[in-house]
Image (cartoon, rainbow, N blue to C red; front, side, top):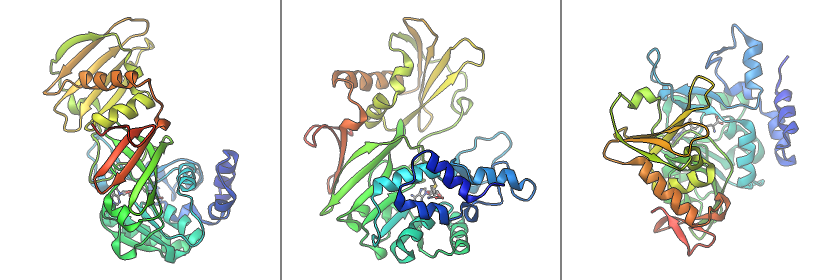
Amino acid sequence: MCTKEQLLRELEGKGVVTPEWRDVVASVDRAHFIPEVFEGHDRRTEPERWKRAVYSDVPLVTQVNDGIPVEDGGFRLSTSSSSMPSVMLEMLDLLDVREGRRVLEIGTGTGYHAAWLCHRLGDANVTSVEIDAAVLSTAVGNLAKAGYHPATVLGNGRDGHRRGAPYDRVISTCTMREVPQAWLEQCPDGRVVTPWGSSFFGGSFATLDVVDGTAHGSFSGDPAFMWDRTQRAGAGRVRDFYRGEEGQKSTTDVEPQNVIQDDPAFFTALSLTDAWYRWCEAEDSSGEATLWFVTDDGSSWAAVEYAPGRAAYEVEQYGPRALWDEVLVAFLRWHELGKPERSRFGLTVDGDGQRVWLDTPQNVVGPS
Ligand SMILES: C[S@@+](CC[C@H](N)C(=O)[O-])C[C@H]1O[C@@H](n2cnc3c(N)ncnc32)[C@H](O)[C@@H]1O
């Protein structure tokens, strides 16, 4: 029989439960926060299978396509979820939460993460903002069922929630393109943790310390959160943007998978903010693959054909933008800089906006 103790044991086995969070994980039952039916699981017909998913260290998608019904075969974009518990613990560790601190959470989702905060800090110290009215209403019900009553707000998390300010901590559970000024105004001397990036690469946590309204911070982790709903990156399947058009053909000697490794992709995302990529492996066992790049608006794409053992790869680029050329410019610049790891970059946010730097705040490298 699957129980909440099982989730605790799995997380302890991974070594991610610190003494401060152990009682929280042990006490807050994830089952209160997960719908009876979600993504192929139905508690009424297969209760044990449902519980196995709920008490596992996996993210659980609870809404797709903003709750708008998906036609048969339509693309399913995950738009709300209960985050992966080990990733929640990783973020909370970065947040450095202590008793008595006031926390603003962006992205209430199911309410499970807000419940963890309430259990540790008390309802009065937690404010959670969600942009989707239906998601928020369900979360408020889930939280009440579990015995928690934080301040919950329907709104765009980028605006924070002025009425509850000041906060000691801001934590976002959706990916941001920039750290909003409102957070710094409402948390002028504290810490902000958010998944951060642009369409090309959004897989970093930004952890910023705010002093007198100016924030400095670093990048870490490997998060895969959904986007801030008001600034999503493009997504979809190849057939959603490629309709057999012919593009400009050329070749490249750069092995395509090298440009999408975390460190160069992080750097490329500073200049190429409005395009995403997809690596599609051939279905036979040839080891061949196509790396697609697509602008968020779908007007330009590039495809690079990878085949093992080749010295040159075929490139095709279509539309007003030459996307592979843009990727190469950033990739070569990253080489010129000595192939810096992501941990060497930092972020400053102040009244003039946000700047990414390499090694020292004076050496600004993005956005460019
Ligand atoms: C990964 S889910 C949240 C997981 C949640 N913390 C939990 O434990 O269940 C991300 C949530 O952020 C919400 N969201 C997206 N953009 C937002 C925005 N600009 N402001 C507030 N909420 C937003 C989504 O609707 C979604 O519910």
